[in-house]
Image (cartoon, rainbow, N blue to C red; front, side, top):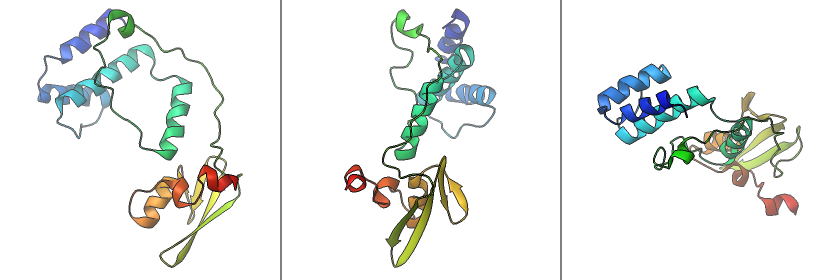
Length: 168
């Protein structure tokens, strides 16, 4: 990380919550929904570093999408952010193209998944890049399961696509 970005990040430590919210608005071009000083500091520091260094690699972005399809995605930087030694702080992510892989629990595109829930049968079509339910496209089965049930569900479990069930 270059010295000017590091100096700007260190300057964030002296700001009040109001100052951090102003900086957040400047950096992200939107209001922050948080008043938590550590959260604001980490988010702003991450964005400053990403702007200077180029952000996430393509491999990291693909992995994040895979995780998001099956679980909650961590959107906060770890508490240790910015507290490592100089070598750790100066590490740069290498950017390279990596081929993505389809979750092996999913059946082939075009397959219809059905689930009986509370006396009604729900049908979801598997697409190459997501799912279709009631004429709308979704990126994850969990989003569809949540819409059907009104609560958070793991989409693979809701539609019976666990590894054991899929292999049998």
